[in-house]
Structures are given as structure tokens and as C-alpha cells.
Length: 263
Image (cartoon, rainbow, N blue to C red):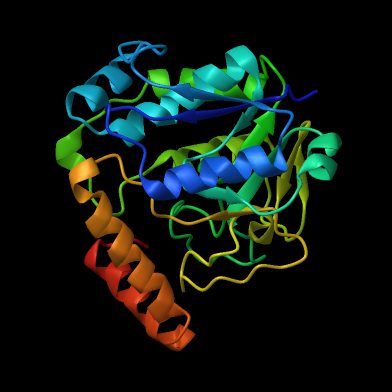
């Protein structure tokens, strides 16, 4: 059973941007019976493992939250959202089905390289929102996995492996397959991207369907000085992607892959 608590992380001490405040308001609207808990330096030990300690020292707070969500969800269970996730309708029916996660990029049944998990043609992103029972073994598995990682800021590039790639790779070892539709991995339901991520990660186009519960706006920023610039730039990109043809962005994505030698 998923406890009635929603967790989010906000490290660094900066004020929550307007987008985050709007998204949190949507959680209250559509999940009114849930406690909402912010996690930050005051209630989470950023030195819990070397990875988070170094990420925090380098002020790369999003990487701190990567591990923090595992620890938080293992200890308390509930639902986790990134602060740029807007809930657009009641999630009660989905939550009643049990533990859940969502694809950011759906399986295609072929072998097309994924954007965020290059070894696979699909990607599961926990930041979209996921719900688990307390002390779920998958969270322990991810904590163990991250305990063996080293955070090295000098090796970060736009194509560095992120939490999305790490999570997807571990889920594959648990039974996640290159199969379209809703999958069940152990006792976790993994839903297609339209449920939690109706913005296409390649083209940037928004396509809300009857199955959509949330929208991940991809505008979160941990640097308050950059927040307005990032927000405006990403908003412009989304608007352009809803006007320009899809092939333009597919070509741009292919050029980026060649630049960073992703195969």
C-alpha cells in the first residue's frame, strides 16, 4: 500500500520558483488527502554517501536529490515528484492499482538508442513521479547501486549517464523489457510516457491524452540566478517545437548524438 505522503527535494536554500509553487499547488488540488513534505539540508544528511557529499560540495543539487529520493522513499514510502511536475487530474485509480513508475521514452520493440539511457530504446524516469510502499526492495537496490558511484563534475557532459539511465539499467536486470504498453516488473507497474510525460523528449511537443495524469515541464532549476533564463528559454523551445515540424528536432537530436559520439 502506498502511504499518503508526497515527497519532493529542494536543496541549496534558494526560494522555490513560481513554476514549482504552481506544481505543488496542483498536488494539493488533486491529492488533497496527502501530506506534502519538502526535503532539504535541514532534514536530510547530504554527506550520507560520498556521491551526495561531493555533489553538494559542487552545488550540483539535482544529483543530491537523485540519491535522496531513494533513501526517502525506502524509509517512508509514498509518492515522489520533481518540482516541475504538474498533476492534471485525480490519481486515485492509478494509486489503487499499486506501486508505479513511468516511461519517459517508450519501448519501440526495436533497437533504437534512447536519449537518456543510450543502451536501450526506452527510459524510465523517477522524476516524473513514482509511488511505492515503504521499504520497497527496489529502493534498497538503487541505494546500493549509487553507493558504488563516484561523482566527478569534470566528466559531466550533456550525455553523461543520469539517474534515468541508472534506473533503467537496474530495472532491466529486474525484468523490464523492450515491449510496448504497461509493464509489470515484480510488483511495480511501469506506465507508457503518455501517463506522466506527455511532452515528447525528442520533439518537445505536448500531447495530453485521456491516459495522462501529470505533465513534466522539464523546467526545474537548482540555481536561482539561472532560473528565469532557463525557464524562459525552455518555454520558448516548447513553443517552437509545437510549431516547427518534427523532422527538424529529430535531425537536431541526431547531430547532438554524433557530437557526443553516442551510438
